[in-house]
Image (cartoon, rainbow, N blue to C red):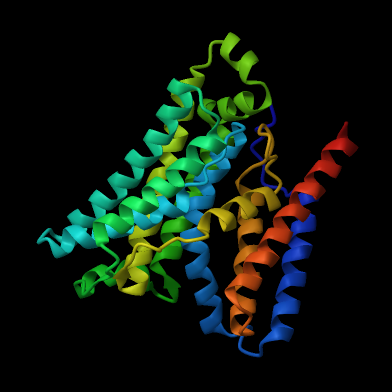
Length: 315
């Protein structure tokens, strides 16, 4: 079991700190607007949405699972929020319903994985398409706009100089650090990822734990969807497209083993900021989105390779 509450960074995480510094230097060379206070807050806004998903993804991958549907859950939650508000609901009740929909979508993933026994990769690949299709069907291709000013405080507001969504993300990050490092539930995630069969024989409720973490991943994706709507002032069916790639890249780049049982939130946070800075810098340099996807994919391959080399070295 490798859940160790700690404040010091590991060697791998120190390497990530160096990579983060290098990314900042390179992106600053690409665009003179990168090293500005305004742009810093733009990076944190992206990090907050993708970061919420990455927290849930860390817990899922620690058990040896994967969730490819998180971007689609974000889009579905955003559309449900917008559709219910335009149907006459209170905007905050609509947002709560969107988050609940995300939670139920995640729970459905968990139920199929644990009850039917289909591998997470196949289940979430299927629900990626299903949830995105539902979002398109509900919206009929239209975007929902025009929300009350108070709602925009969640995605556009500040508490002093700090964006509100960054505060929300920081609170959830702290909760996950404590959850994974200082609770029995957190240690159970590592045990399942290391050896699921042994975890079952030791009496851990493996299926129940998996159901909880997939539901939690869905909840965080739903919350990210609500923040997305508040930030952009619009709900559209393609919201969250590609977020699953960013989340998985951040988690794996942060040192969480794709096979499970090893990793943590500190590494995920470092990986997340590297992905966010690279995306932001390339956008400021007017590099096309398709090129950005290629670059993020290459980072993911490099991260997996690096982690594999590290694990072999430890053995």
